[in-house]
Length: 326
Ligand SMILES: C[S@@+](CC[C@H](N)C(=O)[O-])C[C@H]1O[C@@H](n2cnc3c(N)ncnc32)[C@H](O)[C@@H]1O
Ligand code: SF4
Image (tube, rainbow, N blue to C red; front, side):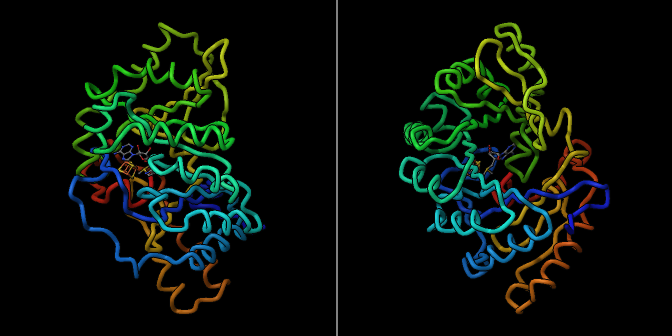
């Protein structure tokens, strides 16, 4: 097979696909309140265009795709897109990152469409605080989570961005919540993406302190679930609960990076924390053949930088996380 190998010898086998840059929430570390500068719908890749690009990646050895955004469930007919991607030869893992506000309606149909794994963002279990951080309603998210459980997604992973003096007093509550519902829990460090991410970085918390604190209350067994992903996991002894720590700042994991990101307008971003990119939309709309598309993907992968520089150059990335989907 023609595997995609980047200049640093890393095999690219995972695409994160942003299906919209819009969102029904405004998490304060992600998207500014009142933000309106979205991509024009004419510039969004259509489903057949997305299918072609992911098909090209699949022929080049990519087997995993994650639907993200913005909030993917605000893109109309998302389950139809999911079904089309799940059917592509070579794609054997289709997952979704969501804020879960619309999941109560969609969980079942997404599962039927072939989405096998779900990550849900949830930073707090307190309704007032949820409103403050996201501008939205917690009860919709909790309903969405229960619908996901009922639809048979297992494990559902909860992603909690931990911020000093915002929600760091809730890490134990979140552990108990995930124990109760059999969810996997992942803590994430804030990243300086766009002005929102940069201002959130003033509330940055090194997750090592969270781990040390949890270890006082729970017995944490290290080294479970090694895999291609960025999380380092521990298991809470005597339970099924796995807790992951995603530490792009305190301990980056770029040497094992296996992914690229496709934004809704067809721009391929080589790294979350760098500017290297490649525009695929012009090729798609100018009638490029499959072979030309594959050659363009290879050309793009040759641009992949070695690592992000969130620490060294925190002001570098002006785009918000919602453009590339985290
Ligand atoms: C951009 S969202 C897109 C998918 C979906 N709307 C959601 O919230 O899960 C993907 C992930 O990025 C995280 N995120 C957004 N901005 C961030 C930042 N500045 N630092 C760290 N994580 C961030 C969110 O918490 C979420 O887990
Ligand atoms: S983190 Fe997700 S839910 Fe929150 S504003 Fe960004 S895209 Fe929307």
